[in-house]
Amino acid sequence: MADKPRIKLPKEAAKGEVIQIKTLVSHVMESGQRKDAQGKAIPRKIINKFACEFNGKPVFSCALEPAISANPYVQFSAKVDEAGTFKFSWTDDDGTVITAEEKIALKA
Amino acid sequence: MLQRFVGLAAAGLASASVATCAFAQETERKGIPAPPGHVFKTIISGYEFRSKETRALQDDDLENPGFLAVERAADVWKKVEGTEGKSCMSCHGQAETSMKGVGAAMPKWDDKLKKPVNLEQRINICRTDHMKAEPWKFKSQELTDMTAFVRYQSHGMPVTVKSDGPMSPWFERGKAIYYTRFGQLDLACESCHERNNGKFMRADFLSQGQTNGFPTYRLRDQRLVPLHERFEGCMFDVRAEPFKPLSDEFLALELYVAWRGIGLPVETPAVRN
Figure 1 (tube, rainbow over the protein chains, first blue to last red):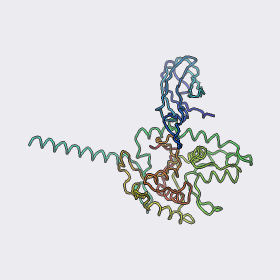
Figure 2: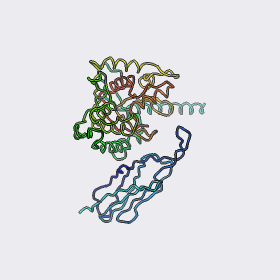
Figure 3: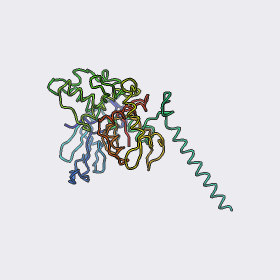
Figure 4: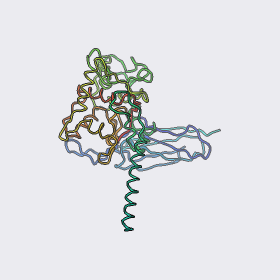
């Protein structure tokens, strides 16, 4: 079982406010360039895509490459116009997807 | 003549700036005053020797990758394992209260074994004796995670090891190891971490070799590294044959080195190069 990703964003924001979102996920990010003790290549296993959407609309996404170190940390900002849910997804080379959600409310 | 003067002035400037640089770094490193009879005047955490980027990574509880391990172990704490049907929680309850200060005082004397034990050993004693579960292997993710989790409960508390009473022969043994030169490079712990700390070794600062941040997230390994693995690494680097992890030698050394950092706040999980 994959660990729960760590996500930090404010619980509520004013309409139109730009907020900071920080995410950290636990992953080995094996580059595929290394060899084990027997000299056999260790197969590549990385998270190759990170995406974030808000109420179904894409906010941010990026492709991750083998040179990125273990436990990738991604920080970005988003403008909040309405209350809703941020959905995060990390796609592994083997096809598994780690997902997480975080709700945000509008300041009264 | 004029040219020579300009050259001299430039040299003067350069040396002045080097001096201020060195001075600035010196004053930047905050430490705590050492107790009387200690080897250092000021005890300085390894944190102070790292770059501001590395320090920022440690300071932010979200960014610090060591917390991934702490959170993993927080779940394992509640997990029932072994034939006794117990989890850590069955006996110890909430780790936040029951484990407070435990990690800061390790290694500690064990009356039954008649020797000091460190946190890794204590966890495995609990597993084999009370939970009747398989002990975790040293360097396994489970053991290092749990060690970090238990020690994190003492975060910010001062390191307080006891070095008197039955511990004193172990303390003396650790001290002897600390000052013994090992390996083809013929270096003792003291050669780098006492005599030359704060200076450059290749492109990196030598620290005082404090242990208050262990298990430490090493950027080089991209995972948490337990203290005895770091000891092994140091011995390997001086081209010596390392002692075995959790051996009596490393345990004595752990005790002695913990004393050298007495009073430093526990930083587990720290982030280092």
